[in-house]
Length: 126
Image 1: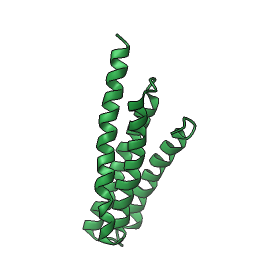
Image 2: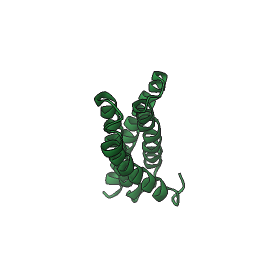
Image 3: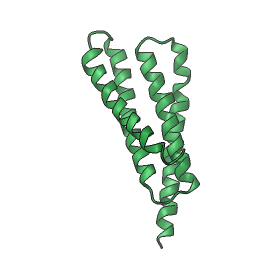
Image 4: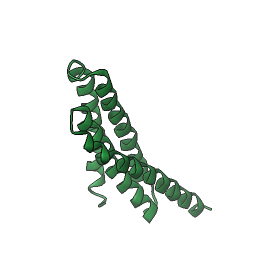
């Protein structure tokens, strides 16, 4: 992902998490049942955490391959995992849930890649 695009991706991920969280809390509480609101709030929480993970990966001074994998994986995870949960909460066909585990896998890959990038960063300082 190009360096000038990353701030935009992070801003969109964070701002949309705030907006979607507010919509879920204020606009959807009378529309969705408790189960679907729970799914919605799970998506919001994961989106917030992974927007922050995107910030951490982006701010790393080293620009190695593991860091790039982490950034891409977190971005893809937000779209697939959170996006599918938002869609399911709003009544998308249950087949939409087929995408959710791929987003979760992207998050796992992102965290592992971030760990590898941090390991490289720590060993480079010695």
